[in-house]
Image (cartoon, rainbow, N blue to C red; front, side, top):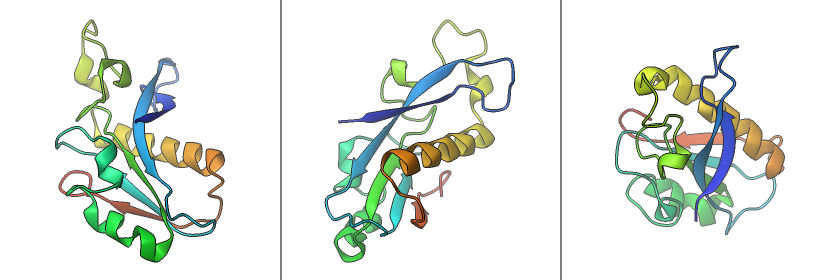
Length: 138
């Protein structure tokens, strides 16, 4: 099941204060506090689902390393490519310019917001973060 965190639609506008709920998935089966955090970054491929943190080709080497590293793993959906559903996207069909928030700069800011969210919620202060992704998110 997806989990969600709230992030800004436009991280760089002081006038656009609209937020949206971005989906992510988590696997903490082998996690021990102080172990690494694996972050699988969604990109232009198919939408992510819960299998991405259990067994999938997207970030499978990270999944395979979980029992050996005691890491916790997250996979964050990209803001445009693979929105979990329309309620989990930063735009709506009624927006006049729905692609204006599609940029690598916005996507990186989403990941920074997720880092802050996850670090606080899951008490990951001091843990090392390692990112995985291929093509655009790599």
